[in-house]
Length: 93
Image (cartoon, rainbow, N blue to C red; front, side, top):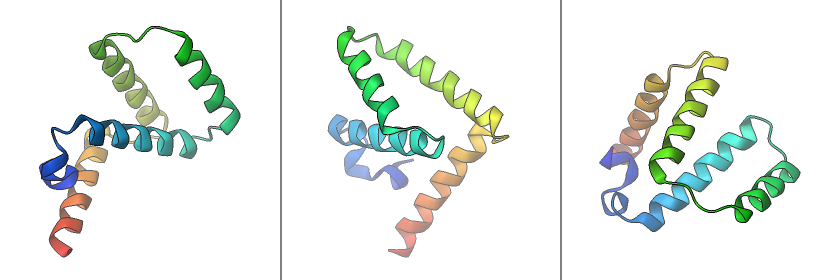
């Protein structure tokens, strides 16, 4: 995991936040999300108090499992493929 995330960034929360946001937005777009829906979600989220991180991660994992099921993708295989791809990019650089 360190190779794909970058050694310096594994404990840097600012880097982690940016990667979560850009990856989530990319997934949102490939699932057909629109700018209007995104704006509505951001406005709704701004109105509420932040929830506990464990609950948010749990919800995210359930959504990922559901999306993976709909698209007939094994979540663990997808993670392995991403890690493998990151390792290949690191060794070829």
